[in-house]
Length: 137
Length: 120
Figure 1 (tube, one colour):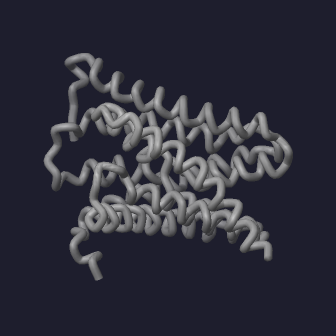
Figure 2 (cartoon, chains in turn green, cyan; figure 1 turned 30 degrees about the vertical axis):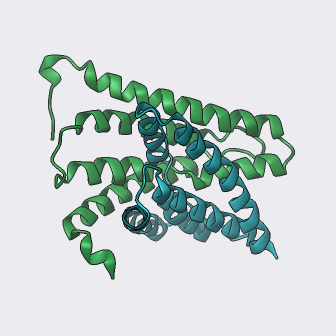
Figure 3 (tube, rainbow over the protein chains, first blue to last red; figure 1 turned 180 degrees about the vertical axis):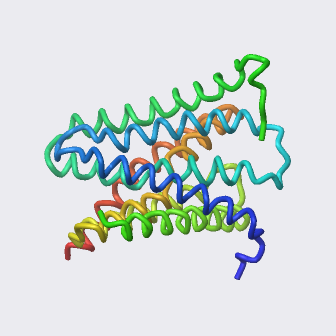
């Protein structure tokens, strides 16, 4: 199995981040289940929060060594798992299936456009940190 | 949901994140180009699987665990957007647009196909 090429500590960091990301995303979806035909707020919120965080971490870890565990934990693990593509697509399908074509188109366009904007905002927040807050893991 | 259900969501979420990393890197290593083919494959296969599960009318805790903890964790939005931004920044705007457009259109088709197969 080619899985041997992937170091165990890296996979462990991704696993740990994945546990956290999944619990937050599913927890929000369970706490605030959207009604049929309504804007899917929980997925929208986690996708944008994850894009913001990933932009921040991406900028923060730009010059980080390849073998560092910060990127697998924070990027692939937490941000990658906090956000979801498949749930968004299922929500789009259900909106279209329910006849809410306009809402589906708006949800799709808004998620992608705001995703880019929040990612950029995350990068900018990192770059504009005051000197005293210059910390890197 | 029961405490056991939440534990399952966490455990599956971690596994799915690891699986995403491995699939992404294996595909990238084999068909490595500038286009993020690995994440596209992850996201489309996840969309197909989620359509199947939804079409099969799984419900209750098992749906939350499998769909939310497993499949939802396997696929990713943030990496997809970051990859697209990096393509655009490298002056590969067409590839960035392709990554967005293809994912949306094929992802929708994958959910629809999965739903149809699952409810058949």
